[in-house]
Image (tube, rainbow, N blue to C red):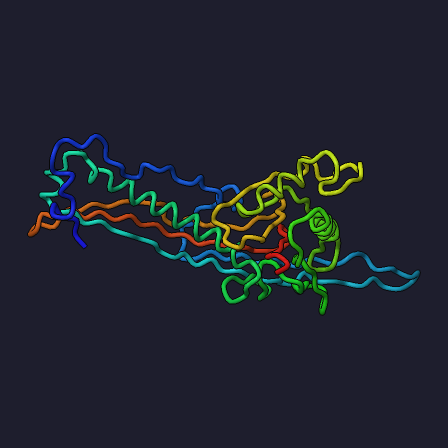
Length: 300
């Protein structure tokens, strides 16, 4: 669709006190604080895990030692998608726009691109328990009760909570991190740092994490979680009772690859004089491992 003067008569005449265009502030971009954002120069990126060896075996006197091997674990592909949108404006519309609204075409497209990126990256959490949308190298959803341990045949581990956000739910999630295992079933040191919640749980999260005593009880017990986690409220989370406890980025994080940053191109149509501008970007995202998160989509 081409933007013509007939569609914007108000912009062709003097006298308007103010023209509102993108006057409302954008939401802050949250995903870059959660994802490990990297650049890419290839058609796709691939992560491959290698499983090490288990703990030492007991060696009896005079008996030979046992040998173990490194093995390949799970691999994850990140295939970059392309996103784009364009605007077409007549030459006359550009000439007669008294309020320079059409000059903000790149600003409008940039805002559209940023919104798309935030929306997409939040979807990993909005569908955190759905294998039909996102799956890891182990074939499981991001949060699942049966993540297989690649080096320990038949063994699984759960990073899924089925509880609504509460003090006891956080206690259980913290224990899940405490007992987190590698692919050989060995305990690993991964510490939760951030509580990620939708807007509907913002007040509950702050009450749980900032009360001096245990919230919602009449006992004078100390609140273990006071000040322990950062609270991040992500307005793009759509499940109103979902919550996620995340480890520090150094202990693992979802990955976002930027193949082509947001870029703009303008061109004119020689015959019509129309100005065309487009915004375009390419990126991919996903998770190479699941041990950095414990979460719930709520009890309901």
